[in-house]
Amino acid sequence: MSAPIELSVVVPVKNEAENIQPLIEEIMAALDGKLEYQIVYVDDGSDDDTPQRLLDMQAKTDRLKIVTHRDSCGQSTAVRSGVKQADGRVIATLDGDGQNDPADIPALYDELIKADDQDLVLMAGWRAKRHDSAFKLWQSRNANKIRAKLLGDDTPDTGCGLKVFTRVAFLDLPYFNHMHRFLPALMIRRGGRVQSVVVNHRARERGVSKYGMWNRLWVGIVDIMGVKWLQSRGKVPVIIERKAP
Image: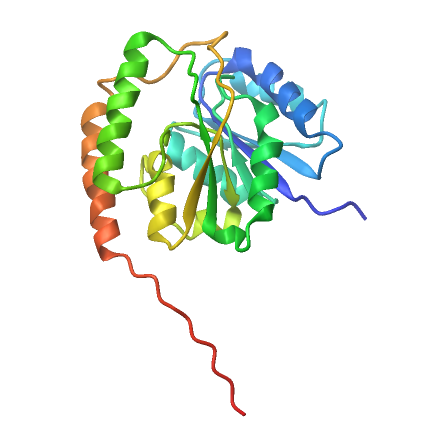
């Protein structure tokens, strides 16, 4: 009987054909021999060679599970599809563009399992030294300041795609489009805490970014207001154990 899978690495992708093989090979190099794991790729309606590249890699390793969206549904929905299909108790998420370093996953995983109540902890990557354009860095810094001021999510870099948490915790969070950008605030609302860990960040070597300032700015403002509403309505009960004598 094979050992149960402890960790599922969930990677949402759309039109990342050139990054499929290099990133999967890096994930395997980072985790082989350390624990039982699987890799869950969610193809969010790609119309390039991404589907075939995933099948090619699946033929080389039985660790790869492929989830395919017929139409593009966005990153949050792709992450949720991956988590729902994952077999591991613990989830690690990575962006599919190769800018997150899979070599950081074991350290975040080790920190999580040290926690007294792992279902109430989110390990968040912190890209202290980012390799992005000056404009993108300016945009991110300002967005982080606004978000932190309004939501109090105790996280310097909520936009980092590298996060580690339990499957149970994630599926207990309220689901909505763009929720992946607010996981720290949602975890705190649930009664948990967030621990940020400095991780490596790399320049994109292949493919083209799917995101820009204008396709996130106004949506982000509306989302922040929605999360503030959720925070105002959240209740965390204190459970008292009582037993008959």
